[in-house]
Image (cartoon, rainbow over all chains, first blue to last red; front, top):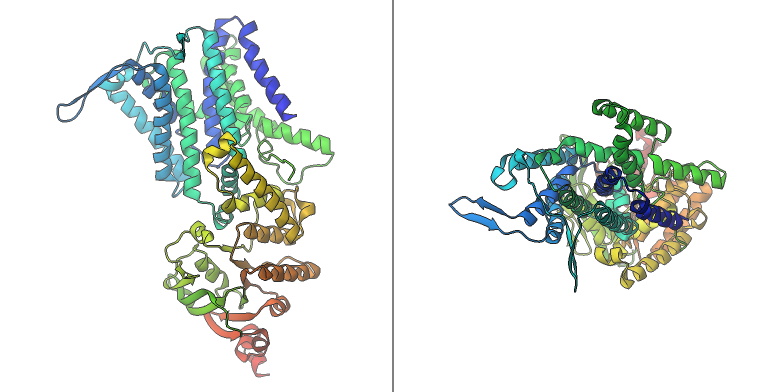
Length: 348
Length: 260
């Protein structure tokens, strides 16, 4: 049943560029897709370990800058009169480096903050994002500061035997984002259903008990942070090579908030939640644009979010899934059926 | 008492919270596959002793040795790796997961596979997963919760949640089990069945240290009893001795009762 829904959803998403010719709408779908990947990575932390990263955009932005700088090259002065010169590399290498560097940042942030967790993690991640933003703004020699990095090359896929394919059209970029999103989705799905995923869930539900059965808290949370940050970095790289211009505004707090809204409205702790929430809040600006001013749109988002959480308090996907289960079994579910998406109940 | 090799040694352990003395100078030993009960009035320091033995609390003085390893400085999950597993008085389950999934979480120590292997679904990871599911079913049968396998653990009665807690502890493959008031919230027949369960656990060679208020149950199941009062050991011995020990009766019933 779930497999059928997934296949249908993927087929529907894959067919979009075949019938949707409007470049403006396709563009909105691509950027939305990129943010959905970011929201999925945030959900891995927020939904499956309970840790709220309010600086998640930092990993996204670091991925964007690393990828952009790798493919643009740079020439910067170091202390002691040395210079560091980097000649441009293909964007695909930038994509890989973006994942690695963002993952490494996730490791350090995790290491710093998971000894204390909870509110401290929130504060550390916010501060981290702000520090990174200030560096991007002020290290003009490397990042061009507010002047932005421009002319970032599009991603070029190496095709063995055929040279390479530069993804210039919207349709090509749409499929690239779709493929990366699918890989990220499958990776997270495998992860949360694995042995490791159960350790994360155990920690979120009852940390003391989880520790007493031998689960290592710091290690588990740090691994989750690394993977989450790495996926966010991949999304950032896609963003840089698609938009082709990056400035420090990418680190704006509002971008993290957007991702949090996507996760919460879709349903944290459910795999499809960030996708559903992301599509709604990614495409809402497009739908509202003809009818209201940008300032009024923000008020409308707030209204939509409140409405969703009022009707479906645990987010769209978990709440609907629970309703379907209840209707089918004909009895009210007693305990909160959290994580319906992940509690894969294969027969023993 | 027949000569057993010693599993755990508690050596002059003291715990002070500021000026409050929770445990002062506690020493006793637990033999391999012995059932020892730690009893005493409320506030005597029983749970504190448990927290020291499992690394949730660092003692102010003294140390605990388990099978030759001193536990000082080890984190709780490292102590769990030594095979020393505890249950909890109140929070004994993962409430939102099914009983079956609870046990799969509890089997953490047995199913360590490389993360990449399980993401890629490699044969080794799949085989390990099958073994875990098999093991979870066996454990459910052992504690008698097969029928509740697919109910959320938080929706079970307190007595049943206690059983889940014990099954979770067993899943972690203990060589010694510390049970913190396992039968509170159970009715008489549940308690009776639980005593059978404890014996069957011991028969598999697992050492048991029990904290419990249910005296008939303690007397029935224990090989040896250690009595704590105000953080000190006031008596130690087989159930028949403890039952008639004036210091114990006084601790539980007060001064007059002991003289009467």
